[in-house]
Figure 1 (cartoon, rainbow, N blue to C red):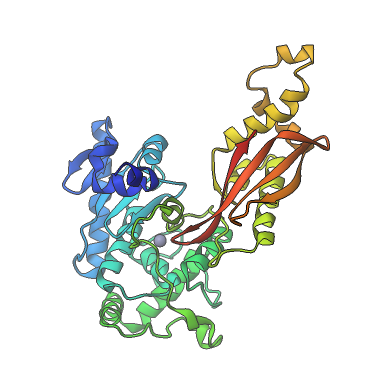
Figure 2: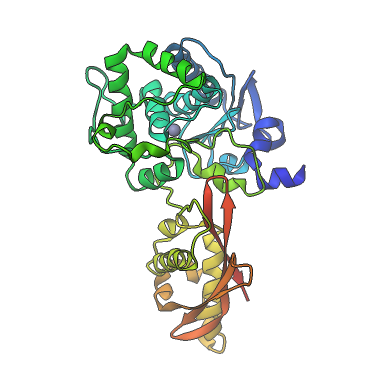
Length: 386
Ligand SMILES: [Zn+2]
């Protein structure tokens, strides 16, 4: 029980909202406690409007997910949220962050849940799943209000698998506009919502996903692997799931955790760590954080500082006058750090890498490990080793 809660906090939160101190506003709607009456009203309205959009589009509801809403980052972190605006979890619930507590994001996530409930396990390409959610939510960022609603029509093949989608969408959020363009155009020329409902019914009875993406007619064969388009939203929790959960989100525009579908080669893993380190050195902390399933970068930086600048200044009188938070006031010291050798453990999944300061190896090493998640293999860490 405790293990589950630690390994997969969002599931614990969504099956037992009270556990995380969320307050029930109405059946199925839970919000951060202590909200002002106006905030509570706002949350209730957001969820009502979002439910309405989903109901209107699908012609009713086949799903009744709980909706958990946080209006502070603290609350969202506590229930297991990541950097996404919102996320649909295990087809049972939707979590909304402070940046996602609006009818568009809420209905986007609710649309994923509704769609998958109706698919009964049938798989669809990830681009269709996302494009449909954009269409249902009527997202003005990615669709024009009327007429041919395409804001971006590239006609290039769009990512079929979740991994490919995340990789591409993290580099280019406009992918959502391209996917929405394809889905809305297909719906528009085939009878609108009715066409989508019919398609879903067919898929749910086992029919194959039709070749509806405009561009794929040209690039035949690209969509050979339609399977695997699973969004991860209806996966079972597993011990390694927090990452899988956090990457299985839409609206994760900034996430670039490298995900491999098979256990990666050491050289590939080392390349990610080198990139991580070079971003740290450049003071690009948020960018570095995105490369790995990270521990607290603050903690890492503090340890690196103690092992480098802090250690070399110990004998120095001047060190006594150093401010306790000097290491974070000015990150230029990071540029004098370098990476030493990689030392892999015998299991092939754990390794540590030495760190140098002014060309000398310091006492602190960084430990990383490669771990499987539901979405694929990722590099996790670093831990600081003394
Ligand atoms: Zn989405």
